[in-house]
Image (cartoon, rainbow, N blue to C red; front, top):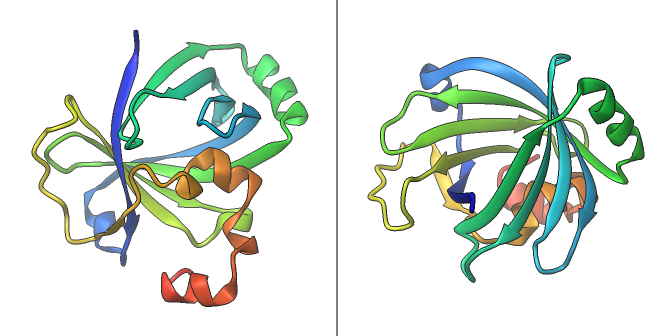
Length: 168
């Protein structure tokens, strides 16, 4: 069974850019999402790759999830994008930082100017050296999941809350 062990953080400042690799433009459409964290999404990377993914919680803390991902034809993904009731777009950067597979996601549209860092870990108890640009940890907070952000974008959050988080 495929498991994803991931921690997420709000990014502070631009210092992460010194560690950034190539960028990938991603479109994600959420076809189904349940209150207990099961999601079905399609993802398009650029114009040449696409996947269908099912995710489901595997622990109570939100650190470990079941993840099943399958490459699909781009034409199918485009058709699913058109059908998806909730969507988001972001630019992803691979990050050269020790301790796991790091990425930084810069959201666009209704979720701009949100920037999140994610690190995939080999084990749930893996030691992690956090970079200075990682701020508030968001691991397990469903409000910050891509599926929820696609349905309830940052744009709709109260202005005072966005200001307090530095997202205005």
